[in-house]
Every structure is written in C-alpha cells, then in structure tokens.
Length: 358
Ligand code: IPM
Ligand code: MG
Image (cartoon, rainbow, N blue to C red; front, side, top):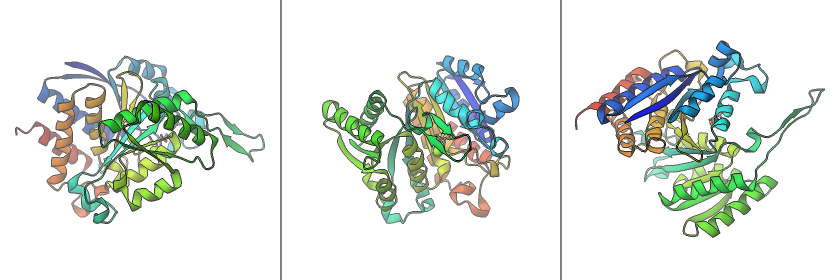
C-alpha cells in the first residue's frame, strides 16, 4: 500500500533522530511491500527562523492531508526569550490542537535487555514494567487563558475542562484497558481543584455506565508520583489530564531506563495521528550524533499500528529494537559509557535487524 507521511523534524536533536526513524520506516516499507511518501515541513524554531512563525499554515495543511505525522522535537535556547505565543512550543501545541489530537498515549514499557538501566531496584520491576499513560492533550492549563498584570507582578494560567473533553479521553483510556489488563487508575487533584472534581465525577460515570468490567481506581497526583517509584507494577493504564500527564510520563519513562526510550501517539476522532518521542530537543547534545533514536523509531511503530493499521509491521519494528538492545548496543543515555554507540549506529542496527531474514 501507499501512505502519505508528513515529517516535522523540528529543532535540536530532532533532525538526527528523525533521519534514523525514516531509515527504519523505509526499510519496513521495503520488507512488507509498502511505499511511504514522505514530505518534510517546518515547525518550531526551524519554522521561526525560516518564516517568522512556529507553525506555518502550509505545515498544518500538509498534516491535514497526510495519513500520519511524525515529529522530532521542538525548542531551544535560541528562541527562549520570545513571548509564549511565538515560541517553538506554540508550534507543537498548535499542531496538536489543529489536528484535534486530544488523546496522547505514552507507553512506558521496559525492554528486557534494559533492566539494568532502570534506576529502580530490580525487585521492583521483576515482571517487566508496562504502564500506559493516557494523557488528555488539548485542554487544561495548556490551552486556558493566560494573564500577566501590567506591572508584571502577577501572572495567571487558567485550568479548564469540560464534560465532553473528559468523557472522550476517559473512553479512550477504558478502551485501551480492555486490550490490556483491564485496569485504569485515574489521576487528579480532586482534594484541591474544581476541574479535578469534575474529572473524577465524569470518569466515574463513564466507567459505571459504559465500562463496568474495567477496574477503576482514583489517585491524587502527588500520591501517584510517589507510587510510581515505590510500586510501578500496580499500574496498567494511567488516565490523567494534560499537565499531570506531562509530568508523570517523564517519571514513568525513566523507570524504563531512559526518557530516550519513550514513544507517543497523539490521536483524535479519526485515523490521523501524530507520533513523537516524549523527550525534548536536547540542545545540549544536538549535532553531536549521540542522541538515542529509539523513542522516535518506536514512534514509527506506533504510527504503523494506530494510523496505518499495520500491526505486523509495527511488531517487526519493535522486535528489531529489542534485538538491537539484546545485542548489547547502548547509546550514552542508556549507560553505554565508553562503548556508547552513536545515534546513526543505533539506527543502522535496528534497520539491520528489521531487514535480516529470520
Ligand atoms: C511533551 C513536551 C511538550 C508538552 C512541550 C515541549 C510543550 O514536554 O510532549 O511532553 O509539555 O506537552
Ligand atoms: Mg513533556
């Protein structure tokens, strides 16, 4: 089959990790007989430098015409002093919103060969770790009104959620749970926030009316952050809001060895999705060729699965990542030390395992 993929490499390590991901995508196409027509567009700082804005209309139009979108990372010190609306991050938030991608799936899965790379004691992650963070992506303080007083001494960000927004993300989490161990932990701050009280009320109703067979529990976000490092195995699907999901998914990712391992899928009502690593643009290591491309490569796998409905192809990419790790290859973030492999070497290894005849 033939698919249209819009690629947004972005800033910092974005272009480096994207190059490896595209190699793997092309190799998957050759192996399974698909053609991926890739179109690269500007976003973030790269777009600001070229066009003066973080999300040019042409980029949005291209994404809307694509079967799926693959993104590297945005941001960097060069653009840090720009007003919030003109920063590279505004491009990322803008594209999530423009494509209606309200559901962000962030699977924190421990690859067996990486057990030693996890900062947690091995007994805490004995049976592997497989937590799926389902993060609401187009609401919350991320999209509320912002205010800064004229004297500059007061600032405010509005936290807002509607019933409709909570219902649809709750349904997505319950659907995910049905395909897994059937357990959802909803995370909020209902002991303080009104939005969280609405969140808990709606999640409970959707559960009782539509998903009574899924096991639902609720945790306050501070407790959830603590439980994640004390007993991560208790979690299956974590359902949470935009801001809490941003924070908890970084925490969950480190348990799997490195934030450089975590892919994500941002989905809306239809098949179109945006796929990106959860990490940032890492300006400190950009251009050095030492970034870990695996989160982006695993995002390719998620794209094959969720938007293109190519499950065998997705698995083949994930197996190739596992095989590369099994062979002992480690980038610097994975504890490779003096023998760390480069971003390109890791990409080549995954591609090699993918194309190798079994
Ligand atoms: C993420 C990132 C973004 C977010 C930033 C870059 C705007 O941290 O995808 O987790 O906060 O959503
Ligand atoms: Mg984040």
